[in-house]
Length: 99
Image 1 (cartoon, rainbow, N blue to C red):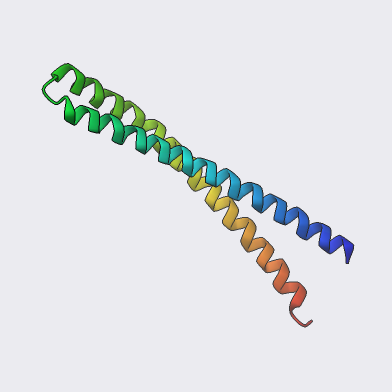
Image 2: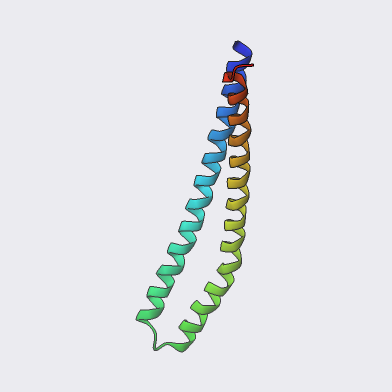
């Protein structure tokens, strides 16, 4: 029985860490979008300054790659987390199902 509890505790710890990692990734993506929104609003206020507008467009284009990379990393963590949950679910079903 203690072995089973130990396995469950380890699984819970791993899932907790996975959820924490995904939460941080979502926060980083959100911050990136908020930054882009802020510079776009600033750009709209200074739309007559062509040089400023071009700089903002360049910055947004450059940040696009970073956002895509972060979203791909989040996708990978979500898939790994779902796989872990499914493995745990299968193990639980085996334990509670009659032989």
